[in-house]
Each structure stands twice: as C-alpha cells, then as structure tokens.
Image (cartoon, rainbow, N blue to C red; front, side, top):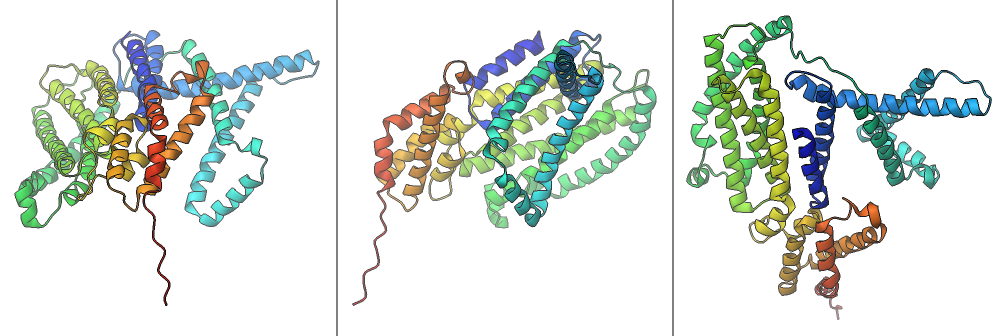
Length: 451
C-alpha cells in the first residue's frame, strides 16, 4: 500500500509541475515504486537492496521479452490464418526481441560514435537527412516506443515472478568485508588529514575568504561537486562496512571505524551544504544549486539511516526499506519546493550587477512564469541591448504553448497541459502587446556618414 499510494501521490505532481529534471525523476520513481510493489506482492520477508535495484531491471527486461512474445504470437496467429507455415511463438518472439534490442543498440552506438568523431557524425546526419520524413520523425518514433514499453511494462507487472530475497550470502559478505575494512581505514586517515589541514578553509567565512582572495563562486565551484562525490563513494564503503552477514558477531574495531568514518562524511556533507548556502546568499538560486541541495538532503538521510543502524535503533534487515522511504521523501521535497518557481520568483540568480533575466526566460520552465513577469517589468523600465533577445524568447515560449494548447485536448491534456502551463499561457497571452513593445525598444543607431 505504501508503494502504490506513494506512486499515486507522486503522479499528481505531473499535472502540477513542469520542471523537466523533476518530472523525469518523478516518472522514474513512479515506475520503480510500481515495480517494487509487483515484486513484493509475490515475495516474503523484508525489502532488500537487491529487490529495489534488480526488480526494475528484471521487470524492464521482462517487458520487452513479454511484448516480443506477444507480438510473435500475433504473427504466428496471422500466419496460421493465412495458411502459411510459421516458426514457433517462442522463436518468433526471440527474433523480434533481438531485432528491438539491435535497433536500440544501433541508435546508442550511432550517438556515441557521432559524438566521438565529427566526420562520422556528418555522414550519419547526411544519411538520416536522406531518409523519408516519415522514417526519421523523432516525436513519432518516441511515441511508438512509449506505447510499446507501456503495454509491455503492464504485462510484466501483471505476470507473477519471484526474486531471491537473500541479498548477500555469508561467504560473499565475508570476502568483501575484509578488503573494504582496509580501504575504509586508509580513506578515513586521508579524510581526517584533509579535515585537519583544511579546517579553516573548509568552513570558511566571508572574512577568511577575502583574506585568501577567494570569491564565493570559486569557493563553491572548487568544493561542492568534489565533496558530494566523496560522500557518495563513502556511502558505498559504509554500506559494506556496517552490513553484517547472518550470524556474524559485532566487531568493536569495525564499529569504532564505522562511527569515525561516518562522522567524517557528515562533516564533509555539512561543508557542501555551507558552500551552497554561501553561494546562493550572494548569487541567488539556480536549478543546479537547488538540485545539489536536494541531493545532499538525500545523502544526509542515508547517513542518518546508517547512524541509526550503528546505534542499534534500526535493524539491518529494515535498512533498505528505510532508504526507499528516504528516497520517496526526497522526491516529495523536490516537487513541493517547486525549483523553477524558487529560481525565477523567490531568489533570482544574481550576476553581481543585476538579475540574470535571460537565464530565467531561457532555461526555466513554465513553473517560473512569475519570474517572466518580473523580467518583463524590468525591461520595461530599463531598455538594454539584450531586451530584444529576451523578449524573442518569451514570444517563442508563447508560440510553443499556443501550439501545445491546440493539440492537447481531451485525454491528451492529462499530465501534458498542466496548471503551470495554463498560468504561463494566460500571462503571455494577456501581455503579448507589452512584450512586442519592449522587443523593439532598443534600436541601434546607424553610423553617421563621413562628410
């Protein structure tokens, strides 16, 4: 019930939010929750990390296999109806699945090779351009792939299958435990030295940064990404370190090492939070900064789950479920805070001399339509060289929304034409005259002729 109710609750946000990375993560979470619900319906015991990670992969694989078998059976039926000899349903389904997989891999390899070699990319582009339009229409191809995947996905969810719940056997866990312990010892020493040597710089304030001649932007760029990567790697090490095979006794040395390393990771994560706080206080929000904060919140939740396990407040068997709850909670936070609205209207990105209005119009979705309103008001007061380009972007967004509004009718509008798009369209539609007026406000004078 938790998985299904959470999936339904997250799906509601698809009709309320238009922030594309957030929508993508929400859709993946919904698919994952439905997958885990299907797997758990035919299994016993507690949720494991293996079920959480392997379940979606198995269901996705079964989606294509089941779909290919069904289509293969359809071809077999049509062939029998026409009186022609056909291969078996299983074999025809395997051939079809192989063809689908081959197409997917060919597309992936073409994209990768085109990016690696511009000459090869030029040949691929010319070849695709020579094909008939109906053969290379990306939106039509994507729509068919989505339809096929959805039918296959639901078919896989309705079929009964069971995964092995045993996450690690005793022998495998024991073989990993010793080398991981050695690795954590070395990493912990290095991390401790880093924290000691860089203590002042790590939690630097404005005065110290000024003395060192370091700006807020440089301070954040040189640290946040690296610290988050360190935290992620540390989480993996901590998981293997604190995970005990069944029947293994508690080792005080490993327990002390786990506490020490976990505390170091918490300090590093706190520093990452502080870097983002210092940067946004000076330069405002951006999508990347807020996504970094949300990801850091998720990491902090995982660390506290590990801490609760070390303190004996959370059993090892329930840690995977606690991690899933933390992930769902983080996705809810991602949707509730409305990232594009915060960036565009609440804490706008600051270039130091003015608000970055071109970024607000160009990069943000319809969730930030109030920021578009502030941008229009700004350029009405100050006519600048980039006024025309910014207003052209607003006009382009209006044209795009107008086309979508004409196409999205009836059931097609569910989840595609949401509340944010409606408000953004109403604003642009009512203020189109103001936008066109500002668009032509900055006119470059032609040079005077030389007499």
